[in-house]
Image (cartoon, rainbow, N blue to C red):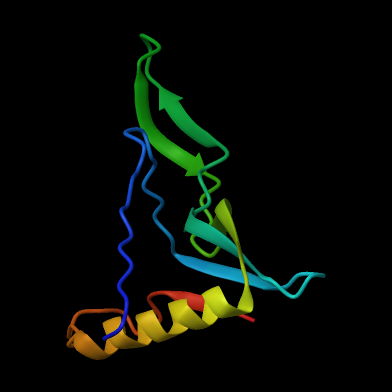
Length: 115
C-alpha cells in the first residue's frame, strides 16, 4: 500500500485578498515563469469645471477631462513559478474550469492572459 503525506495550510490574519483582472509575463533568466498580476479600472478624471452662482455655490458641471477609452492597469502582485509548479496550476485550473458550467451573463473576455 502507498504512503500518505498530509499538508496543513496556514495563513496570516492580515493576508490581503488580491483581485485580478489579468496577468502578463514570461520566462525569467532561470527558466521560471514570471507572472505580473494586474487590476484595471477606467482612468480617473484629471479635471472638472463647475459654474458658480452669485453666492459662490457650486452649480452645474460644464467641462471635464473624461476619457472613457483609457484604462489603467496597476500591478498588484508578482509570482515566480517553476515549470513544475506552472504545470500543476495549469492542470488544476483545467479541472476547475471543466467543472464549472459557463454563466450566460459572463463576459467572453473575463480573465485574460496576455502573451
